[in-house]
Length: 108
Image 1: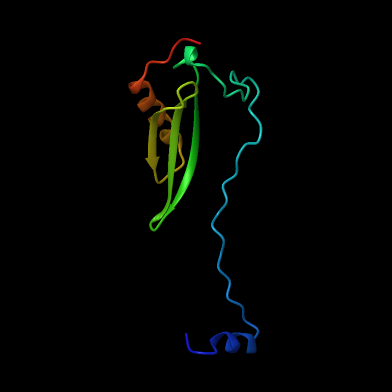
Image 2: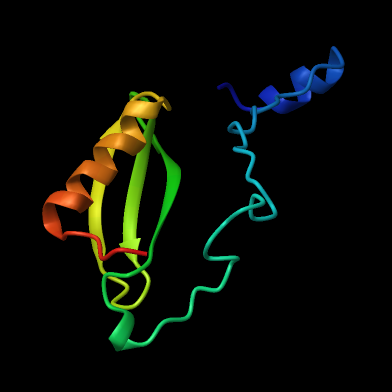
């Protein structure tokens, strides 16, 4: 850019605008029928009894990368995860399959 370039833009009433990245929407309340009811406390005696998951996106040079995780509530250990360039059912099912391979879920 040449010196005084901003002045030249102002002279013709132009503004430089940088677009904001897309914002992901989240669900603010637990769906009805949730067994956890947003209670994420558990003692060591409930190890491997309750899991929760999350899906998030990461910006990369090639576009958005989606990460799905499954975490044990009692140990706070990541049991399984999956990465993909799409946000489809396979992403979550792969993360659950990895978690099931790492640990066998206790009956609820």
